[in-house]
Image 1 (cartoon, helix red, strand yellow):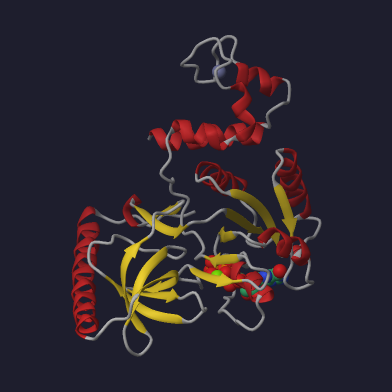
Image 2 (cartoon, rainbow, N blue to C red; image 1 turned 60 degrees about the vertical axis):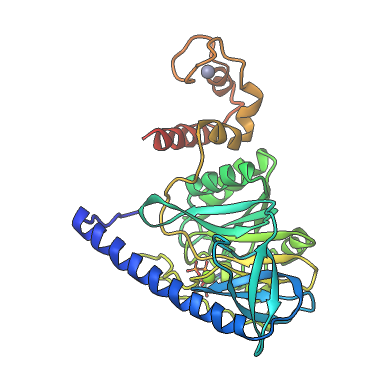
Length: 336
Ligand SMILES: Nc1nc2c(ncn2[C@@H]2O[C@H](COP(=O)(O)OP(=O)(O)OP(=O)(O)O)[C@@H](O)[C@H]2O)c(=O)[nH]1
Ligand SMILES: [Mg+2]
Ligand SMILES: [Zn+2]
């Protein structure tokens, strides 16, 4: 993906503008909190975060009603999927006073390589790829490493299969085989011809799942099919590049009729590295796990060392060359 180069001076300017905006937002939110505190607040109750619009957070109570809330200072970042304690004010507004401990927190690389919390308490990650824009196996592997380490169950979904033709079919067939062989659930879907929804409904039941993937692969369109009364905004692909236009801008949680919860997330902008280390990357490639600790040298880099269990497994076709290549690439990016 093309990266726009910016000078240090520009970076500092952008950072200073951002800092000013953050301060203004913080002040607005403090004022709002003060206003709300001057009203009599209701009893503490639990709720969960549906989405956020800047400093305001949308909280759903146990009856499924939604409230626009501000958070007390010093609660840290609160994200979609968080369980919170809050108090109701007037006019469907409220104040969040505590965040429940999280089972997990999915983060993504943000501006300047800083990690941004994305969603909390996820137990399943649906990695959405498509026929158009073309599926990227390295990005899928990135998400698999994130899922294995969270931990959350990954599902690999190939969308827009109505567009399959002789040119695109071999790649999707190859990737489906690759991931099925590893034991991952793979679903082929299409919003146009209505494929894959029985499998999807089944997989999403009773769990909290998130749709992740490139912009334009059809994440929001799939949710519109699952919840037709919603009508979430979906975007055209750019005619020039065939890429999506980043239509979804905030992660948002939806309650499915089957009892599951599903989060729609904005398409990823870059392939920046998640908060992983070498051990997490290794743990993320599940087929490598049986060979860990079996090399002759304990600090084996699995390259040209003698008696390397992983090189041996490659020769014996127990590990796919593509996945091993991605493992090496991720490690190299991490150590940069
Ligand atoms: N042919 C075909 N087009 C689809 C399908 N699903 C979605 N699209 C189209 O793909 C485009 C992008 O869909 P979105 O649902 O906005 O994609 P998204 O993944 O939510 O994108 P971001 O919100 O930008 O991350 C839209 O023009 C959809 O109509 C499908 O199954 N088949
Ligand atoms: Mg979207
Ligand atoms: Zn080795």
